[in-house]
Image (cartoon, rainbow, N blue to C red):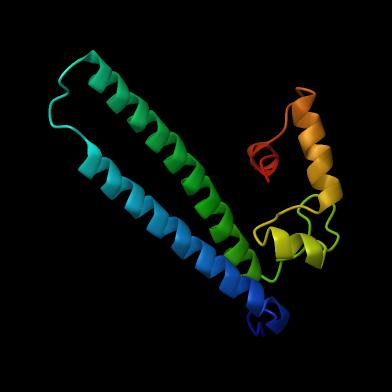
Length: 135
């Protein structure tokens, strides 16, 4: 019978839940700020250009936040499935130091560096590895 996540991961669970809430709050605040700051009708091409630039920044920031929120959610699921703290590549334990720094880490430092190097060399990697290269 499964007893749930190991107690030693309770601190990471709390940190991940806090991070998820921070991201959600940030995304909501960004959306509100964008709506408030938007001009109803741009008065000239400069205003229109500025508006488009701000929208572009918002969309890129939102994409980054959504990606991080997905990674945090994945880490919480790994805690539930008792696979948290195990490298998805080599299946060795991820160091506590790495988890303290990046609680949503999916790979140990060695595998993370190897994945980043493969991407830098232009090798084909799966989407999970590509996403991991950003961490």
